[in-house]
Image 1: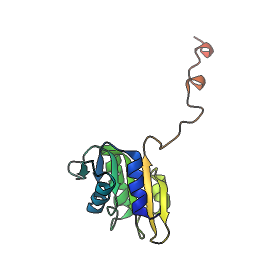
Image 2: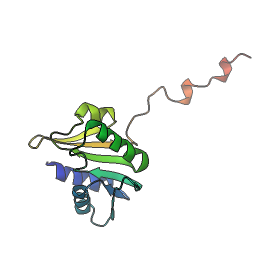
Image 3: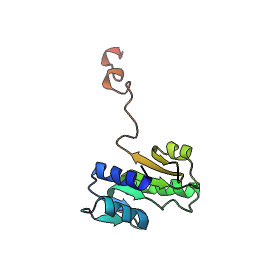
Image 4: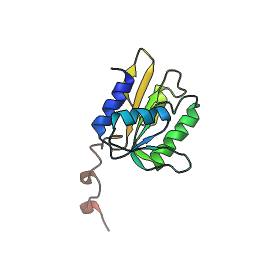
Length: 143
């Protein structure tokens, strides 16, 4: 499967209530995948709130720290889920995306393009020790 078809399938599967396109190519791809949904354009001055933010060419030509800052702004102010396409030659490598909480969704070997997915809902599983059973034990307190 090529990466545009994969991204379209991810969008259709997610059935988001709102999508924010980070660039014109993302706007076109999202409109093709979700024809009944109005796609918002991302503006740094007034970032829109949306369920999914999609970037196809948004990372092209950016340095690694600029990519990290863009991702941070989007996660903080706009979307709880990000789908980003990293074309060959992207300044941020796979380890950098993984450090930011992204999962590789697809690697297109022919073009060297990778699709990364970040979803706050599945970002981290709850560890077993994080429950009431291991926390407050009033019977162990001595006055």
